Image (tube, rainbow, N blue to C red; front, side, top):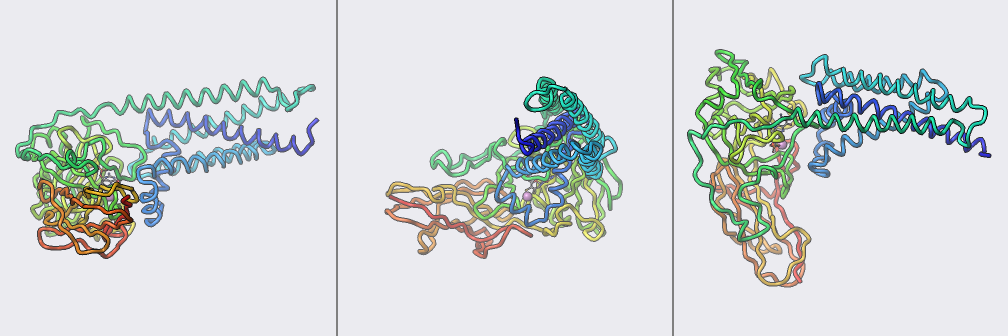
Length: 513
Ligand SMILES: Nc1nc2c(c(=O)[nH]1)N[C@H]1C(S)=C(S)[C@@H](COP(=O)(O)O)O[C@H]1N2
Ligand SMILES: [Mo]
């Protein structure tokens, strides 16, 4: 015999589990429906994306800093945990008050549905996954409670009350259904994503042969060109947009002589250039990883805008919109000052990967990505900062944000231990637009010593550097600073990424034994 207390607790647990299982089945069904219709409308993703947009800037910055590229997985995980806790509550409530419990489940799905249709660029179809979640989850819970109840009314119940066999079969069946729908949803998504293999033109203005970097000779230094698959990724997206290049278009509107819409073929048929440009994220801390060097293939931005004929007496910004309605603004005068601003359609000899903006993105050397590098771009609106604000402008980030001179020590690693004797200190430095003139290393607070620079690629590209150090045993502090070709020295004033990019010097501690 069990004490009433124990029975009570066991029943609570059982019903909590019913709530959770029903919700998981509902979410799996919704995910499958979303995969077929609008992937981003999947309830957990819709809630997650809204959380991202509502997250205050300092918290977002902290998450990017702490979790790096795992920030999205952690967010989705947290949203799921909260949802499942509420689902457990729904199950417990339903035990005594069925309708109330079912309403909690429907309410949960309702929140996801409302958020899904409120997302920028969403349509009425986006409510469908949440609707499916509500119906499937509520029906599952209702059914599980019937199965459970049948056992309860059995005059000779097993130790646990309800017919164990019925409950085990029902819960097992629902769990299997959830797994099957989840797997099918994944398969549909990957099938729908298709390929990114587009025909790219040969550049009418190709880049010169790419020099050999220092990384072969001095292992540990960042490769001169970042392999495409290792390029950093920073964006607000939980799922990478799947863009069908055949129906994709780029529209130029706003303060223009004539609104123009270009297809991918139209773009690829224009004069294309190949340029080596280093992209940098404003969220990069001094010494951080959000910087990458690539060879971009694209159409000069000025040529694309000229198709529409811009009215620069009115407009002061290009407001770029991506396939989901996300916006990024770029100062018009900066974009048109003669620098190699591009609408890029290729990267390192191939098409843009989905993660990096397939089929087209903006690249503007010298500006942080959040005010220039709009991925999955579909529209450029010529307008004013007064009239319209982009995503990060609304969140108080700077609007004109030139990349600050910076340098990074790649080797040795912070807190590493090396043998005494010759040690190569090496890394990269960048000052897009002007170029790197000098990199200096400081050891244990002594005078700055000049490092040797690696090959020059372009002034918009980072520069590798190294310094051969005769290391003596002990604890040492290594610092680095760069100077650009105008003679401007990297600032030693520490600043956070918000609102216009980090500054300061990287100093690491290493042991030599
Ligand atoms: N559509 C879209 N474009 C975007 C972003 C975004 O969130 N959405 N993030 C920007 C930021 S902050 C940076 S640093 C660069 C990063 O480009 P990458 O992911 O290809 O490295 O893309 C920019 N373009
Ligand atoms: Mo960024």
